[in-house]
Length: 231
Image (cartoon, rainbow, N blue to C red; front, side, top):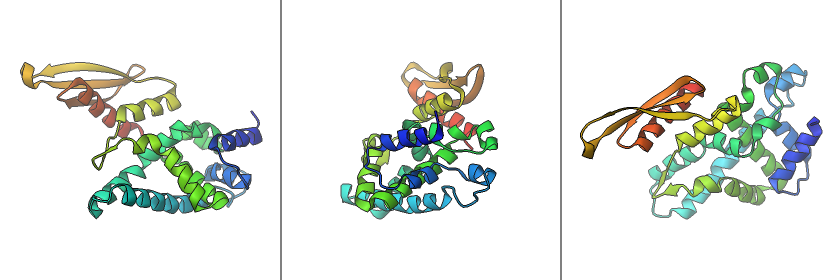
């Protein structure tokens, strides 16, 4: 598919009446591509800077209005969880953002289209582009709709971080493989067992963890694997 067609396809997926398509093309352009082509300023870092601030404002207002009884410390923790790299990467995977990015050859070879840090930056750049193109109100609506699956997981002031989902999305994007979990050890009496799980990508064990249930052990293994694979 031609590059311009990919941009049109992505813009169409936004559900917005876009006024300035060039903003979105810039938001999808990594600095490695711009430097490779000799256009050192035509990349997404400045728009990402703006998007980061806009995102923090939108999330802050949402939390302030939605959780009127939570103290400042809890609101700060929730905001940090919502705008962290893992949450942004999860949004990027849901948008299939990696397939639309313009990357330099080195980033392509290095798997940049599935790297969480790069994808997180691209999400912030897209938010910055929406803000510049559509204004704050429409940008707020877009961000909250994009975040809806994550916002639904906010329960009593705590965001449940599903590392199994994060690892699966990363593994499928990077390797086209779904991780496999195995319970490798059980210990303790029946009423208080401790389970140990390992997670494999292909034939390689990439993480292990313990828990009081098999699901808890698998989550711990996924968290370790996510930390190792996405430095």
